[in-house]
Length: 240
Image (cartoon, rainbow, N blue to C red; front, side):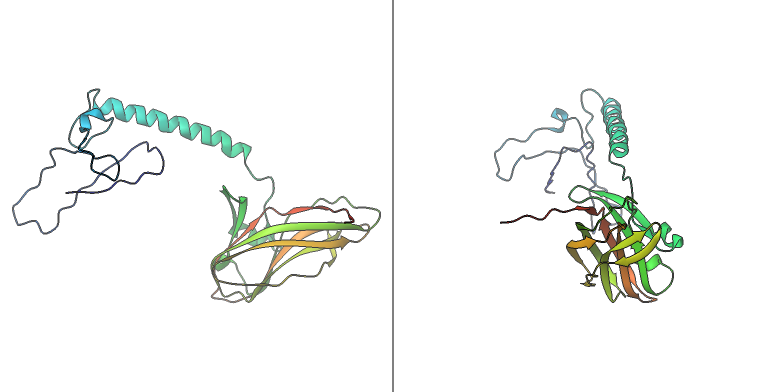
């Protein structure tokens, strides 16, 4: 019996399972030894499992119980460190539904490339038609109009039953929407990603609130939509 182990990282524990097919009635199979060949080319060097900190049917010199205890201790240390990292990387804000009843269907997950992503479970959303989501905004306003810019990543997974997607920025007068910038309509592909960057003029005495609308959701809609934390701020004109 031969097999190949392809490891991209240093594992804490490896378990091998041998399956025998077509075994005659009453026959038995015993695994008595395990030999490993490092690399893709045959070198003639085959380390015995007693030289390794794990085995199949062969007990290491220090004993299998001691090896398992060391592995469990290492895993506990990793879990403790991850708990500290989760607190440091915890998102301060997430996307929320225009209706508070939709908040339960938005969850955040950490992605090494995008950071924190708010995932919207489209199938679980109640209702049909246009369904909006917004990102918490800073209510600070300016005395005069200012050029602003914002950007957000939109990720789609197995999406269906949605006519289109519209990211925009709402102009907020206190807690009331006083208008919005020109909406950008995105095609609702089943699996796709969009990097949205938009410049606009924020009117005087208004605050900017990033918003996102699912247009024409049907009763049988399904899939997920991921929204990154938007980057929003003033922009300066420059000459070249």
